[in-house]
Length: 328
Image (cartoon, rainbow, N blue to C red; front, side, top):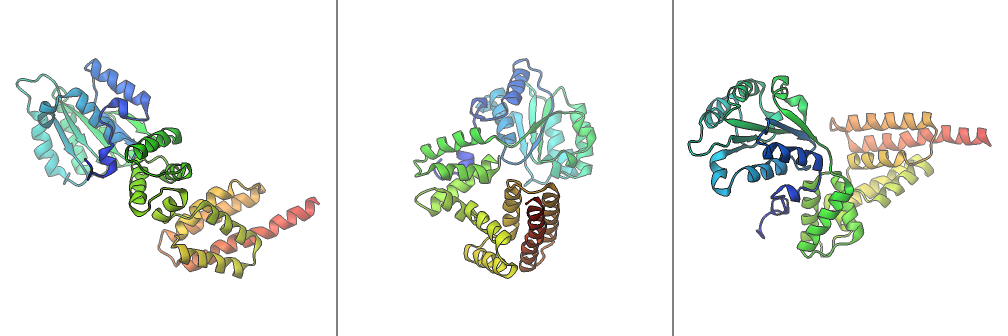
């Protein structure tokens, strides 16, 4: 187990170890106890426990000896075109177990990546072999799954994990791995993960390999994210310094720390909403920041977009000054 990535080493093995979505867990547990499990559709952001939940469900349904013959798992790394649906999936779903009266379970991870043709072929299999098999489809977005399949499944949305649950789990794993971790380091991991447990564990494992201590500075350095103090400095420069000086200061900081303008924009946007600004100015700033992010998504020159970012805040200074002079 020591050479496993932590996301697999500490993957929940049963329902008790799943740290969130207790209402979903309780509902599925009740379905299993009453032997009324429907076809399931789990969707939501990555790293929120969708796959872990259905694997824990499978381990509750079947003994270790039964597992390999009763469960079929297919991931996005597998070819899941129409041939796979008409071949292995159909063969697995259509065959009954002679000495076992339980239904089989087919898990299709990242089902929203399946082609429309394969989903249409799957629709008929789901309908025809319900007495024999249950399907669990997992995806990030419902938009990638055809309505005919959605209507045949009971849907559960897995939202981002709450900070408290993540904090407790990350602290527990840090203690199990005997890591030298600080409180601000744990909080930085949870903040950067943004509800994604998988990301939190990957970042913590990477930081532990690069540094002897896991603190806020080392976590941000490992991920290449700008520190909160860096963002405050950038915002202060843009609001208080002349355009040229602000641009040069930010550019030097970007080069020195290898920061991405995309990450700076995201953090600036969050910080802007904490500043007491007139609604009209805040609306204008938000719209212009959105346009900058849109331009960056096309791979435009970062230096030009950085100039535009500084210009956005420089242009916002005049209305602020005018309003303050008028009120005085």
